[in-house]
Length: 460
Image (cartoon, rainbow, N blue to C red; front, side, top):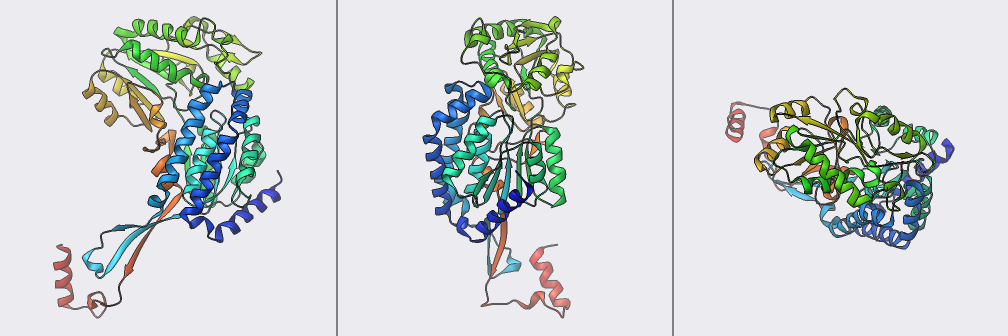
């Protein structure tokens, strides 16, 4: 799309926002109801495009994208009147008589740049939060999932005028052009390298940004853990969407005494969930493109594979694979894997483990499998990460009742539910000062009595 066309769409959205229609909670609720109906109407098409782009089964598409999105919409429809209402706060005695309150207000026109791995959920979920907060939005889906991007454009056009919500299709040129424009807010989900560029471009216009990035999310398993259950939940979390999940357990860090037993249970679970030949399992997806397939294949060191390892270039598939004898210096530990490769590293003491964790960049997710509640809580309090689970994986993001986001290298800002509404809202602080009394203490000329009264008021 040409730069002039993108600029025209932004101008349309700015004019639409200035009309004030989106300030009404009822307008926002009706918009979300339209979106909900469109998703329901186009459900079979959503299944088809996710199958075409990522090889996702209907069940996985519904479970990991549609159902979570639907819950977010229902939550916002129910809570918009409360979230959008002014909240009274105490007023200091020095400002008597008056009333203080906080009024959430939409930023204006926002840009949402979404990734390819969950192209429906990670595009429309931030859109739901942005519309709930009263903004207009321009959506830029990933070019790596072209079938889904085309459907998103069709779906959005069926719901909203372009001055309210628009979808821009394209690749790097369109991304570059969009980032050169002045938006009121930018919401980006993707890699750290692109996130840095987004932040750099946003700084030119002093545009606030939310970055949902990734990182190497650890999965710690101690010697007290229920290994059978841990293996089941780790295999689910790691190999869902072929490991192409930003909060997937990137690697296992387990106590050396239970490594072999844990690997045995993981092998058993892979066979149970995916069968003897996962590459022929119709419910097992594929890698998004040849570039990522080649990158992942290069990380498969044959001498370290203890399970899986087979690949199929014609279908861009890689088996769920487990690797051992992995060191922190290996290539597979230098970047987020983002694929169905599961390295297993070990620790001997809890001190060693926590020291190692604290030397690494802050991950997006953090998982601990243990029966020791004291130790689990200690890790949750003393390690920095975006969000996580004790004795499970992934599920912390599938709720509108907690914010989801990263910290440090894994991102900034959060969304989902109230956190998402707040992300796309500016919180106006307002004092409504009454006119029936005007205390003279703040006005000049000042004197000794003024100073004494001030000291009595503030006790300092």
